[in-house]
Length: 170
Image 1 (cartoon, rainbow, N blue to C red):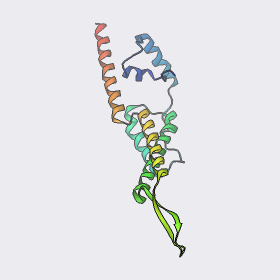
Image 2: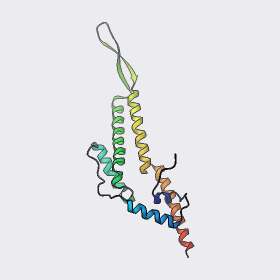
Image 3: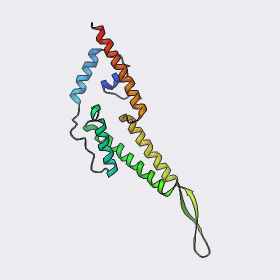
Image 4: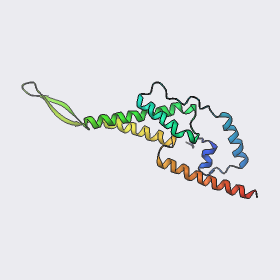
């Protein structure tokens, strides 16, 4: 399976590994600009719960200066926020009830239940699934420190290359 297509600006941030010429880069930028989506509908979908909507608005606000989100990202961002909200809820539930739960294993002669503590594997599994979703989507959006550091390093490298190109013209 090949690499996923990336916007030219993102490719340049990662160092122009494909060695595109200035003409190819300019052509690609124009083509991408023509396909750029609007940003007027960056609002949380109604199906998100309160916490997910709050997270959605927070992210849109924080990412607005980066100019990377547009209307086409609403559903992917909503999925991230939904997974985030579910992760928080399952974590709260585990914190309240603990990782073990009481299960009736037998009854006494007086018909009183006999309990045994068992590990709540389902809650642990669900928490891990939500964590994996949040992590995977968060990386795609650049929400982790390592993803941002990688982008910043590549962007600095691209700026140095651009400065070098500018000096070649002199």
